Image 1 (cartoon, rainbow, N blue to C red):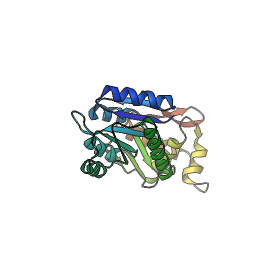
Image 2: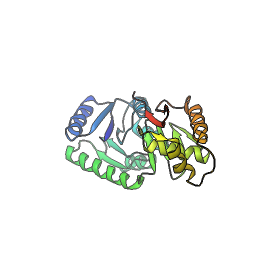
Image 3: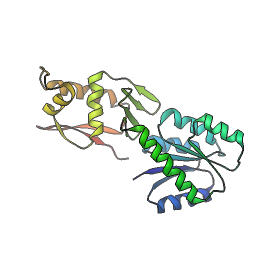
Image 4: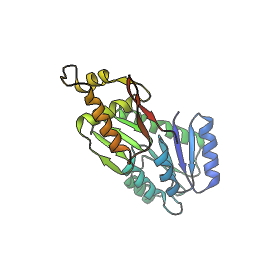
Length: 226
């Protein structure tokens, strides 16, 4: 199910958009300001953010800039003013679209669907996200919140494969063939060594996932529910 984060200090707007999107099958999360929104983004996988411009603590432009630094999701800004300066500032901050209040609920839905389609075409399965941890298969980077890690190649490929197939148990032989190739001449203890390194590396960095052992069989990646 697609999850949409709505960020607005106006409770009436929050309720209106929540009802409208929930009725169309979206999972909706609500935040009253930018600080709350960033906390939600750390804990929940979000597919799209709808952000009001005028908010206390952190305005919509600043929040959009923070989202753009840390997450690859579409952002739709809401504003009460149809001023070209506001639109320019929004696009400079990194917003994908702009909607002026008051707006028709149907137009909001059209714009959400268009943004989600656009991002689906862009990602092409190069990004795998679990919680606040994202693996970029194109750049070989692992991002946890604001922190970006570059792992040794085989560690990255092993983690990426497990990330792409959560809850699925793989034998050591299967992982050797998949990551090191069928011509690999070492033994399957290589997998154990790399799993140990991944566990040690991420134990203090992320609680989004754990790599579990199934005795006598192999390993699988377990997503941690919060």
